[in-house]
Image 1 (cartoon, rainbow, N blue to C red):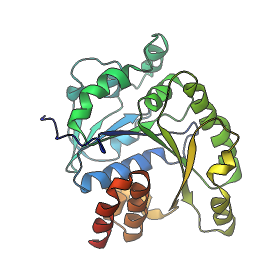
Image 2: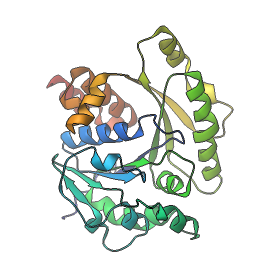
Image 3: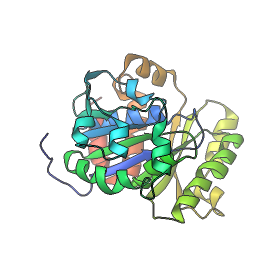
Image 4: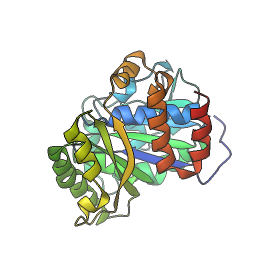
Length: 275
């Protein structure tokens, strides 16, 4: 694989994280990655969850012998751990740790949590514009590894009081613990899977960065809101990025990317106009 021409505005590692399972991390990772690939950027997805949901989100046409374990442990040439999907510009490192031995490996080594960031990703960055990592839904060594490796973090937050409390207690607590040990990227909170109810809309409108002002973490609640639409499930069933199936989803995903990656805003606008 030839190295790409580097643009420092790209060459970005993004981790989708939450200590709560079932909030939509995998779907969000897949759809951001799919849209960036269709914007003609070279994208690598890394399935950082031992459950391996992202690994089956898209069709794989060339499966590598390795995957996540090889990347985290910096075991061999990282390019040998990269599989090809049937979507142009979109590669994936699948989860290959069914026995969850990787958590033990990371915890047993002083540099276990930073090997991915300091070694493996430095080798992969020249080959990709964007690297997106799904993460495990528990506060664990593997999640710390994916969080520490990121240039920026996105955490989906369902618009209800219990989810917001869990986000504050769990995800922000984990981030604050890591920040005490090492610097991390900017954290974005995303209102995700908003139902078409009055209560959900009121809560989403009230959920701002100031809501978590007492937290020590640097968090920004972004303006984009992703609704709870059945097309996201349909897209996963069809193993396609959601923007290929629905105009509203195209708009929502383009708006999200424009907000977290402002230098892509004009390109996203052009893409939406063509849909």
